[in-house]
Image 1: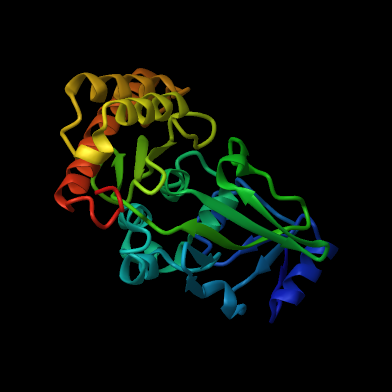
Image 2 (image 1 turned 90 degrees about the vertical axis):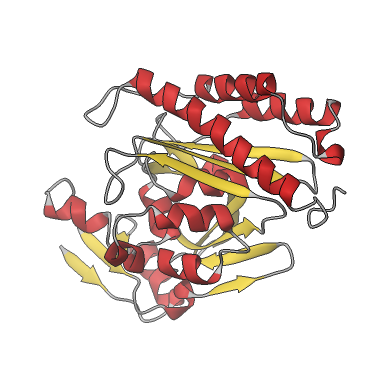
Length: 296
C-alpha cells in the first residue's frame, strides 16, 4: 500500500487523477477500521490532512459552506445555530475522540446507510461539491447515495465541501442504538421545518440500502399543514395528522434484518421517531411565536 501525501488541494486533485483507485483519508474513522479488519486493502491511500482549506467553513447569507474535513466537534461548537439538526446528529457520533477526527465529508465518502450525518443533510437540504482536475460540480445530497456504501463521485473526484442551507426553522435528529454512545445506528430520523417555503423535509438513516427522504410523508404533511392553515395559526398538529405522517415515514423504509435489529423493528422505530420529532419541532415553532421564521 502506497501513501500519497499532497500539500495542497491542487496536488490532491492531480494525485487522484493519476491514481483513481486511491482512497482518501482524513479522520480515518471509517477507512482505518476497514483496513485494520482486512475488509479493504487499497493500492493507494490519499492523505488529505495537510490541506487546511478542507477544515474551514464559511457562513453565507443562505448557506453554510462546510469543508469536507471539518470535525464534528467544530460543528457542535460553532454551527449549532445555523445547522441545528446536524449539530444534534454530531453529538451522537462515536466518542469525543471520534468526533474530533470524523467529518461530514468522510461520512459522505463512506456512504454507509447508517452514517449519522445523512438524515440531517437530507432534511436540511444540502449539495455536495465534488471537484477533479476536469472541474467542479454540485450534487444534490439525495442524488449522492447510489447504493450500499456507494456514492455518485467519479473515480477522479474528491469532496471539497458541502453546501448546507441555514436553518430557517426548528430541526431535530433522533437515533436508535443498542446503547447510548459508541454505537452504529439501528435507525435514525431527521426532520427540518422550512417556514419560509412552508415545507417540511425529512431524512431516514439505517433503514434502507441508502439514506433517503420520506417523500410521501413530506407531501402529505405539507398539504395538511397548508390546507389547515397551521403555518399561520401555529395551532397544535392534530393526532390524526401526526399518526398518518408517522405511518408514511415508516412505509418509506426498506430495511433488513441484521445483528442490530429486525426490519420490523426498524420500520416501527422510524414511525415513532417521525411522530416525536414532528411534535418537538412544531412545539418549538409555536413557542418561537413564528416571528423568526416569517410566518406570523
